[in-house]
Length: 309
Length: 325
Image (cartoon, rainbow over all chains, first blue to last red; front, side, top):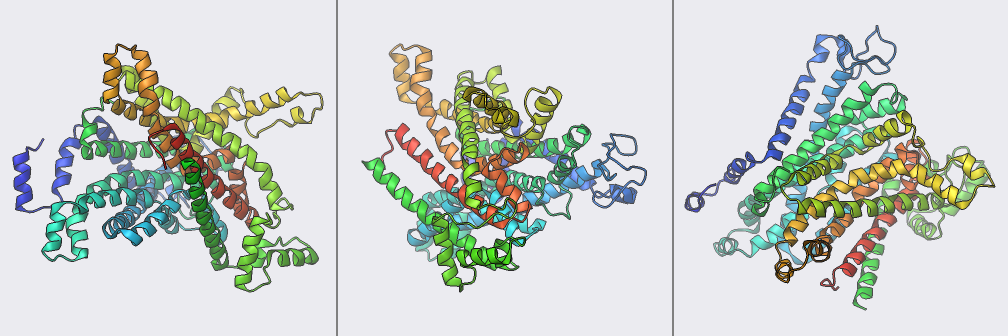
């Protein structure tokens, strides 16, 4: 724990945006949930990194186009294919590794965009108040009740096959309201604090107050929400791919499940059915645990309560 | 009285939101690449029939008039004909709606009740083994990928153990047999419902458990719990009659907040189990380029979501006498 005299000195010196994160890290390290989550995420990140290797060993290990000429149907694990192959003779392990890359890509970019939108809109709504606030929050309410997956479905029935970046963009556009509500509430309470008053009296512009004085105080909260948004983005993309509306040019875990389900291999090929589902579930779990651990960092009331759970 | 005025105000809000959704969908429909007429009219239709439908849907009119037609058709239930079924769309989704509502409401109620009950127990044994295992179990089941869980359920309970049917909602031999009574039909549907309901239950109860647990821990610190203890009440009475009803309120809120999530999950579950509901119809129609059906299913789901939000809010106001609108 950082004692209060030290904190005071830090603040009086100059507020650095990194300080709350460093302080948070020391608390975060103590959380079992956080450590498990982080470990799992590092494993998944390594999988994503290793996904570049198999196609270089042999073109038949390419997750999308590589076909083993010696295999004509789905085969179980072997020395040649550690996790087996799918119905076309494509290597399941390299598909699984490529899936990790897609999951991170989709999750992190969609979460980042929706957090960016949510933080900006939340700060603007909270800071400006009145008409703009009401308008933005009504919009947030409306978007919040829409089931994102089904919205994307109806959009793809109108615009045809969506590519992965369009999907990411739509997810981001539909997932900001939760964040913006929290950020707005935080901004409302910050607005009443003396230091904002002081900045205004000193002649700071609205933009300067928002970005220089309010933003550093709400950013930790935004980052907390980022972990939960990563989770929901990964799930939505996976579900979409599972239903057959994913980007046909990418190999995601949802895609692998769609293939095993649609080609009727789910009863005969557990080696194909199990890994992608376990991966999606575990990556969701680990981001979720990471989020809960960060929650403890940001909400001191929770710290003492959580035991091993 | 107050509550009635609140419901009225919320209904007006819902109507406005729905109009916005309706309008946005109309604009997107016009913006989308391709010919709007071919999107709404089945290519297999005879030219005469197509003519009639085009003028009914107002597709030969200028844009503004088209919008008026579109809104009018919505309220008169004229969504055009499904390409796949060759029937008016409204009849198809009318058949599917009760099935979706049955699965959706029973799964939410079941998982909320069990979540509240288990969360109460977990908080009561805070820090002990029961609590740890319940929390871990809730976290894991809550984050499992739903369609995959559904496939695993089918694989284990319908294929390996052969306890339940693999797909569908009814067995035809039971329903076509004139000698079979109502009870047998009911049991047949229940038999088909166990796996989809179980899947949705497993996915949902975890988050309710976690919310109930932390809300219980907060409530137990309140003054009135100390008062109850000081009065010498039994611990069971304090837990079940003083703490739990108050602690359950955040669960009701979270049911409302997670409705969109539940609807997504419902559509996935219906699809995997081929449960004849609206969610499955939406997925099916999108993959078969059946736009009239997709549009109607989507709008109906939007109505279901908006109205269930209202139900949850009213329930909340009813349960918590401190809240008066």
